[in-house]
Length: 100
Image (cartoon, rainbow, N blue to C red; front, side, top):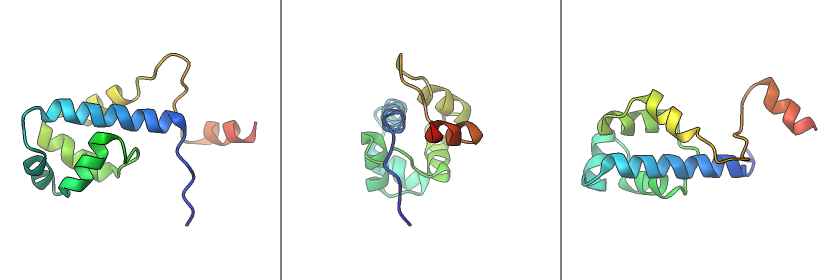
């Protein structure tokens, strides 16, 4: 399976997600947070650094739960775009975007 390159909007969203999780983790150790969420510390490190811009939903849900974040708050925060940046969308509109 070939994975398509990430769009600039997806990369930016991944960076916002990483920053949000770092802020929410605060003084907690990365190791303790990762183990409590059931993910490897390396996975958490990659997400927080933005190197994994599109982590699995279950991974984010587990980390958010450990950090006391609602998924609604996470979604709202990571989907705030900078002026002039269109976020990637799924569904029919995404296909139309590619066809243009």
